[in-house]
Length: 390
Image (cartoon, rainbow, N blue to C red; front, top):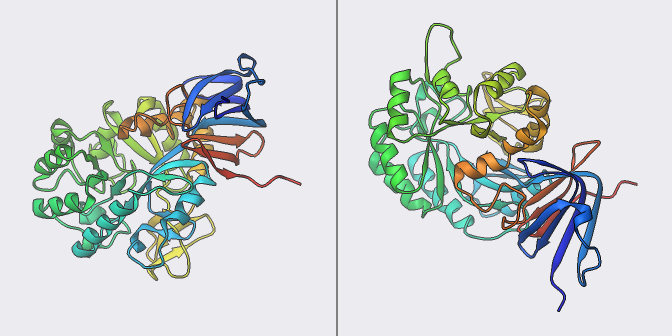
């Protein structure tokens, strides 16, 4: 009986750990079963579906672990009757993302709990496109002096009762929560989060080195969008920023859109941090006429508050991929890891982030000339195919 197999042929494949030229990727239903040089595969197997992607290259499907919206959907509107997260799933697939964490900023307590419960319900389902596998809460236990574009009235001191309510509302689907380590009871919050399978991520903070090191000792191992929402690097005053930059055990998110962080700072980070601790994120939001009057969208794809604070970007993660290759001195395969295997390892997504046998068949194919997405495969299904060029 013929097997249900698909062989993808492409100019090269970033697994991402190695670069395989003239590559073949053999998938059976939802899994990758072999990868190697194309000449190693037989094209005569009965029932084999061969997809030839000439002038393209493959990476594992991108993982966006910090995204608030796009394509006509914002997580803050998840309670609206006409809000459809499938819109975001399809949009992300068209930009090479196959897994993402819908993320919430701080909202007033009742709404924050209700939104968390709604997202937990939504991520239990399957959608055509990118897979929303878990939830990211960017607050509410952050420093009000570094809340950025977030609603200051929704920011909260660490309240263990509130934290337990959020965890209960998340129903086991919260994977990340941002907190400021200088807040009272941060060690208790870290302990509670870890007990419930939530990764405590330090961010939106004014913490000094002692407070950060205490949080690290308590189990914090991630930093939310390094440099943004944190004190600037200073040559005489140490802070959370230089501690997480130089601490090899801490994973750091980077928004590599060309505006949130100067390209030279991206290069410095790539030289200082162990490569596997850099996680590219979009921090993207959707901006349309219904978006809050507090925000302004400018031609660079960024969204600002009225007083000039960057609130987010409308640029997809593939923009960060192109920028990281240009800004840093990383080889292409190591830059690819920042959007694939690094977030997968950090989040414990053991079946994703790599192109190798036994892994989930999440693959993105980019055009060699334009770097645009040609095709995206999620869980063995083609979820996006770029229109043919005339």
